[in-house]
Image 1 (cartoon, rainbow over the protein chains, first blue to last red):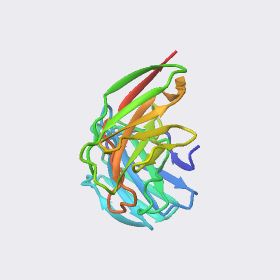
Image 2 (cartoon, rainbow over the protein chains, first blue to last red):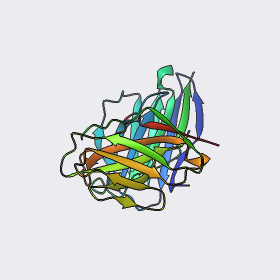
Image 3 (cartoon, rainbow over the protein chains, first blue to last red):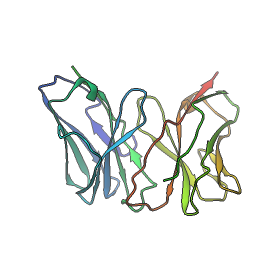
Length: 114
Length: 112
């Protein structure tokens, strides 16, 4: 365990479903991130939260909706996804945006959209 | 952030040193070299970072050339569990406005 916990580990959902991915860290970090990793592609940054405020939205479609209720929890709400959204979704945290070399990643959620 | 160039893949015999090169010829004076690795189906893991001096920790050593245009990550005694994709990233240390961006990395296969 890295200290960043993601649930569920695996998720299969239909294109009309609504689901949420959860990320939790108790490392005392103040910045949290969502990354997407599609097959044979580099990791793509999706969202950045610093002190619970979204500071970056990397041109992500609105069918992905992040939520950061506090500095320990981060959610990614999913609705009306497409099959091409199938990927490994990774959450990471760091002490702050400034001390961002110390990223700690979770193990990811493997999402399959059918 | 400066771009990096890494070989697509490498093989290494178990127990031998794995030397992973990275070219970063356009690196700026205040940019550090970071290495992360990603074992299959897991999240990336921080390994080491450095500015211009060689660095060593319990996982690896980082050798940076004097002109800082290239570096080498050394795993001194590779094991099968070191099989992973290794990412070399160049960025300013406390670049709060620039989150970590990953390239394609080098796929290292450690062979028994």
